[in-house]
Image (cartoon, rainbow, N blue to C red; front, side, top):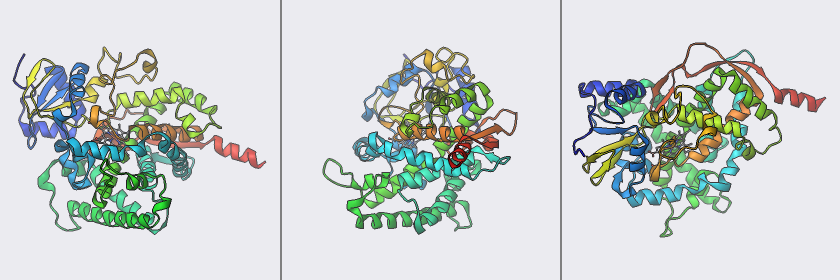
Length: 458
Ligand code: HEM
């Protein structure tokens, strides 16, 4: 057993940082080929961190007691976006309390109540498409997922506040979403507020305006308390911790922004990848269409259970990790991981990408094959698109539901084709890995529903 950090690239730390920001997936792959299933990155501005690309190591990490790690501290780069009272940033009991308060809206019958709305939002956004129009799928999916956040999470569906908050959120997401914007998050020295003309100043100003609108919304709801709806904000406002304490206004606002940043870009990106893979594999598209053809009268939750749709979504989540590594864990005690004795204060992180592309787990890993999930059951250490243990994605069930309902609504109503033949590579956008160019498609035809509506008329 070794008590040194595992080997890793010996290039200068500034170069490691540049490569990490620019191409985190190919860089990880290269390092795994050179150094094996566990290796250490050393980057300017960050402590060394150990990347794990083997299910054994993932199991050793996910099976630790939660108090053996701090995670919130590693997420500090998102603090300027989400504020101090964010689940992302908490550890220990505070994190446990906040998760319990935030959990109910994302489970069971509450999810059911969002399903109808999600399908409607997808259909409304797509209804603007014209035949022959070139559509950037990622942009369209961002429109849908932003609407889902505003309506399902914030519970704001119309009126003046809706009109005001939507462009502000879109603008704030836009800044952090560009490759340049990502650099603002990683490089603290760029975070200079030189007024609203400077990029960072603009982010801060927009954040203030959004917070003011959210505060107004919270106060308006208090007067309507007995009639609180089922949206996530309403459920958060009625939740109480074990001591009977509700969430403070500052917590409510910061957690809404947390859910916005956690849920918008991630889901839109996965949907864009899903469309890309489906459209470039005619046999997959045909199977999906066949399955959906029989689903006209199904309730949204039944659509979400369709088996082939489920396999396709599982494979998308395997193939394209939305973030290059899951939240880094800071060991608070010494521990043994993959034969290394690691001291307390070591940063560790499982890599979804490396594990999901292991040949012995996923034969022909670079091929998109939904059926592989019929052939084998995977453990939570072999397949973990939503991370794991006490930090597992809070919105996983909502995200999967959203992916399935949006795909079903659009694929059953529209005939789309890829606008270009050349393959699309992942590119860092903000904190996520998104398809470069956003997946341009051509809307060939608006289909079935239009035909069906016409039939009903005649
Ligand atoms: C397909 C879409 C999504 C993917 C692939 C995804 C993936 C992830 C991953 C990998 C993590 C880190 C887990 C870890 O380190 O163990 C995470 C955390 C989180 N996600 Fe998601 N996510 C998605 C959508 C959403 C949505 C829609 C929401 C809510 C609206 C959401 C809310 C969160 C929150 C709050 C956390 C932090 C959990 C904590 O620190 O306890 N995510 N997500």
